[in-house]
Length: 353
Image (cartoon, rainbow, N blue to C red):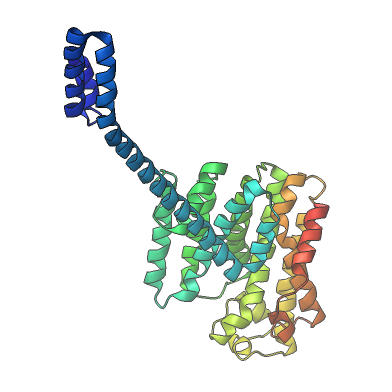
């Protein structure tokens, strides 16, 4: 009996004091009876109790500190992604705010992941560095699906989204692979190449957003495909003035050649008719994809509409570029539409895209 108790309590780190306590209790019990035993137990307990309380309080403090550190890191990761998306993808940020609570944080994590990849090309001086970053994200995605995400805010938030919504790994890798191929830093050879790039990046992101909303529907996927293509085309047009200032042109070469517009025309910000004709053709293709996507609106589940709020942004830009006669260098196109958040809210309330 004594051996059993001493062995059990030894694991708790109190073997010396407790053995003394047991031996004393046995001796007193045999000599003085139960009352003496009771008083001795009480006396010995007074000596042991401070030690037990100290150990218990120390454990509680350590647990509290650990939980506090985890909570602080948890909040830091979320804030990091929010700040990144708000700064680099304002339209996506506002759209994410209109999603249900259960999907909002995951949406911001996906958009932060997309921003991380998108900014690589513009932030590197050598292609090798860009390829190394892409390889990091390939490895990171593999680690995320093995439940060992890298200690990096976007990776941690992405891991949380993957676990919560069982996101498809293929879409994440397809975005990375397409961004990696885009490291070539050359214009798109034709409009079809730009559409393929848009499908693999923007449409893949929309497929993931649909999964965050719990939508698995072939009509929603079909609409997402066309919306993603329209978004990629519009993004290429919107970024043209920025790239031109850096003496880079990524607009499809076949359309530029068709209208006799050279890269130098865009680099010097020409507003000649042939440059406007190039913009018209490219913008028209984006509009066609947008209209095609809307042709499925009657068959797309209502839950999917919130993933397609980007159509408000696309429509807004296409209308504004049409008003300035397809002059992409017009100063008004470089300003953000202050009414856009309201327009997004109204569209989310109507559940239409």
